[in-house]
Image (cartoon, rainbow, N blue to C red):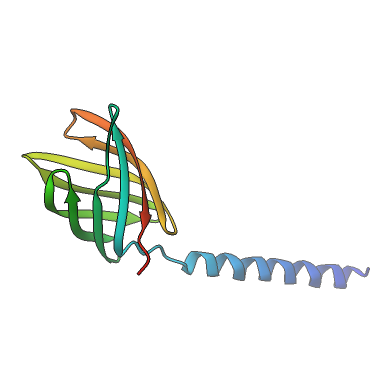
Length: 124
C-alpha cells in the first residue's frame, strides 16, 4: 500500500472513531420517571419507589416507602447520581451510578446505618 493510501486510511479511521465518540458523548442519561428500588440495611430490606424529574443536572421528585412520602432533591453528573430526602427528622442520602434503566449504590441513613441499593426504571 502506498504511503498516501495508508495515511488516508488512518485519517478515515480516526474520523470515524471521533464521530462515534461524539455521538456517545451526546447521549445524556435521563432518570425522569418512576423507579422501583430494593435496599438492604443490616439484614432488613425495603422496596421504596422514587419518582424523578430531571432538569439538566438537577433532580427533584418524590419518595414513597416505609417512611411515608417525602420530597426528593439531588443531582446527576455524568452517570453519578446523588439524591436525598428527610424522614422522621433524619436526612437519608442515596449515592450511586446510573446505567440506562438501572441504578445501584449505597444509602446513608443520617450516619446511623448504610446499605446497598439497586433500582430499575418502570416502563412508561
